Image (cartoon, rainbow, N blue to C red; front, side, top):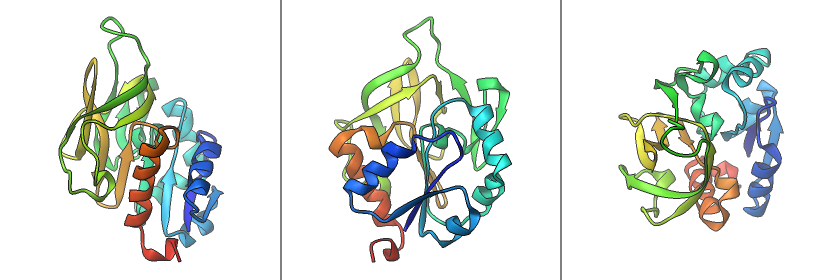
Length: 203
């Protein structure tokens, strides 16, 4: 079973519907007991970093996330909160991935970065999450802040500047785009995540 974390900052319905289309058993929850029973966790998110972190703290989920050994997929803001900090409200993140989120330079192009874009580089094509993907696959993005490319970047994208599109550290992965809004391509990426989770998810 997959658990979708409910912390008042998530695009919960669209992620749930995407999993339903894949016939994946899942639950939407903010209860640690249910998260403990899950085989894998999706950490979605839309909105602003500071209130999102406050909601995680209020639900005592920040510590749970830092300590879990379960496979975790962060989506959009969920990916961003894996980092140490964000310029958005000087928010502190979970600190799982080093780095600080920065805002796109609106003097160079429209902000937010909104719409379809491709990977500019797949740095680790053997990683299970991006297996089968190249620089010709389109995903849907909506974000004003970006994660700089670092050693944990497995695929990057370019808009105004090069930024981390897919990241991975230990059992944590994250995507800046919205796979649940990216049609068959996004569904394939979600399937890659599901297939990387222990087989009890499908059994």
